[in-house]
Image (cartoon, one colour):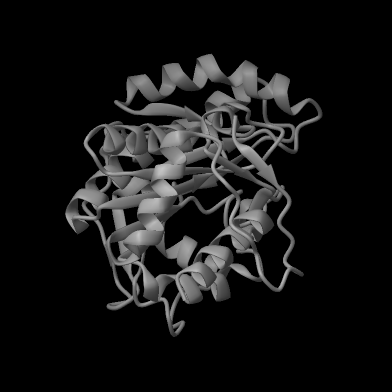
Length: 289
């Protein structure tokens, strides 16, 4: 169980919390000792940006970009790892053209897309053919399940997500849709990734763990931090565990939420949502000054 710290954006100096686990303390020590060989991995929604009813309205916490700009020049790289398209995360995060963020990349669509701050361009392979078939069939499936009231489809380009947060009974709608959407996804060679009142249908083989692991190995980093808030971040937590087993120290941070307890239980540090993540990033940057 991670240490809980209330971090407020009004703090002039954000103290670094002590990780609750030995592995976490080793991870933090390695980051502080070798920041230039550290990758800082961050989820977007719920970690850098508060969760909102309409994902199109999600924006990074107002202090997130200044905190990242203070930290990024001191580490090997900051990688925002998200299920969103890379370009959308860049726009909603306000990451483009910010002095100090030259070391920032966005791994969008679970690593299938990459945006690099230096070039400002997104690179990506061709989309999975099952997504187009899914796009055509999904409205009919929701209709047959009587699920239109309050549920809606988010278009993610390389994936589609069905949100139930606006339904009369969001959890019941979520549970009712799991089986039919899993059947639909399987038929088209796709998988279903459950999240906080959202079911995402996407190609297999890419998740935040694969994306993080490949990127850390590509950079040759000797320490890693990963912060997330949702079930989709569990593979990234597992990737950090794997890196630790391979001798790369790591620190696991949960952007605390009452909706998902699994991450909280595995984290070395639990902070109070995006404001807490910002405080942690600021505290880290100050320690590395």
